[in-house]
Length: 283
Ligand code: GUN
Image (cartoon, rainbow, N blue to C red; front, side):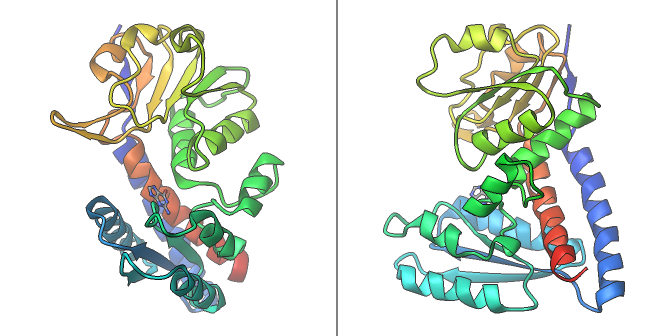
């Protein structure tokens, strides 16, 4: 059996056009466009690429994009002052501070300083807590995008066994919360998990978010399972995911490619969250 390939680009394009329609309605009702501020500290090449593509996508959706750059040696106080100014700026609906921050900065303190209502990354403890308790929340973009891809394959996820590999605050933990909200039976696996292959072989849904190139082997996948690969690993052989795609595609029922799977969904969900934040503030 060969898996069907989940086309993240196509699902993301549909979401982006829905967001653009919502932006037009918001503008007609309020007389202004939603605004997203992206803050980049330092010169990290990969982060610069992400920030540029976020800005382009924001403008393409009809929203206002504001980019702030601070030098790598900026003091934490300068970043906190910028966040405070953006919190107070009525034209700004969403604030995203690109991670990772330089090591002399306290990322958790910065995230906690963002107004939770403008926290389009969904990283603020208030939003994480709201997600965990089933309250309306701004939800982290990558796991939200993964859920949308899963829903494109499974109209209902209820009762399915899901294994999330990776326990980060950005992907693994919120992904597990979202799947729990869909009534999956959820396991979070991580670097100390015993016999990961056996756990994966029992899973209807696998979400891989570990950052280790091609770690998950094809023969660890249950025949017919749905595999969502969050990994974006740059190797000598090019961009690869956390799953050995060539092996897994022979076993799975559906699988995301890298690139062209989860990646495009993350930015589309950022636009969605920005529109949602704007509507909640001013809709
Ligand atoms: N760095 C890598 N992914 C992300 C993300 O989703 N949000 C932010 N702020 N930084 C990131």
